[in-house]
Every structure is written in structure tokens, then in C-alpha cells.
Length: 170
Image (tube, rainbow, N blue to C red; front, side):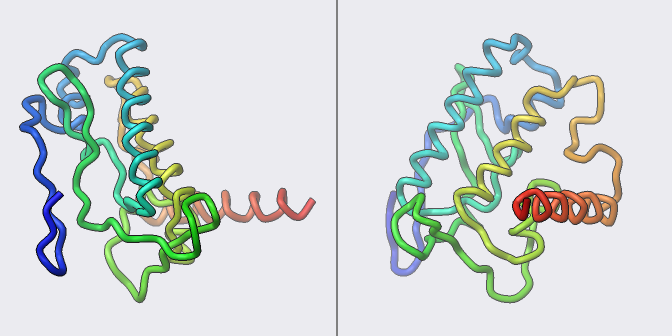
């Protein structure tokens, strides 16, 4: 990592396979469940390091995972990454988005979408969506929430949020 005040720059190895999204779309390799589990595990390890550094990625998706020639995943695209506030990672640390901005709707946790609050938990929601992308049948739509319109995704997440609030109150 190279820091030039006030911006960080990251130098990474060349990832010959490109994005995980592209590999999944073209149905190249990653055909065995074992290979997919290995990739999922290594992405989780990368996210663990990001969280340990006190950061929230905010844009975790298959399109932001690069694969090396031997299919080793690398978390990339840190353009939306922010330092969390509120203590140590795991200590309810979070980042509050100020005003409106880009939100990756189909990967966003309900609290990120509706409250503009990001934490390791919202990154883990996005990781869950990434797992859907990774393990979904490549012959079916692998886009999160399928063919639902953006409005349909919002309604689905609102319904999910309401069920979660009711369950927590019981």
C-alpha cells in the first residue's frame, strides 16, 4: 500500500483470470463445489483482514473479486471503502454515509440501504449475496434477486426488515 496524502493506492499482482463475475458468466472452471468452497473461504479470509484493519468495504460483489491465474481470489475495488468509527472492529463499529450516494442495491444490507449505515455486518450481508452469485446455477439468472426490478428489490428488503424487527421484538 502506498499513501500519497490524502489518498491510498494499492499495487496488486496481475490477475489473469479477471473478475469472478466474468469467470462465472463464461462458466469457466470453478465447476466443482470444492473449488467454489475454496474461493469462498479465501474471500472470507480477505474480508477478515479488511475488517481487522477497521475498514468497511461497502462494495463486495463477484465483480470486485479478481482471480489470479491459479484462481486465487483477491478482493479489489476499494473506491467505496471507509474507516469505521465506534471502537474496535466487532465493537459495533460503523460508517454512516452522509447524504445520498451510490448504493449497490442488490448487494446492500437493509441497514445500509435504508439507514445508510455500514459495518462489518453489512459487508457480511454482501458476502452472502456474493456466495449466491458463486453457487447459483450458471444456467439460471445469477443476478441477485433475479429479474425483480429495483423497486421490487426495495419492497423485498423492506418486508425482510419488517420481519427482522418483529422477530427481534419477540
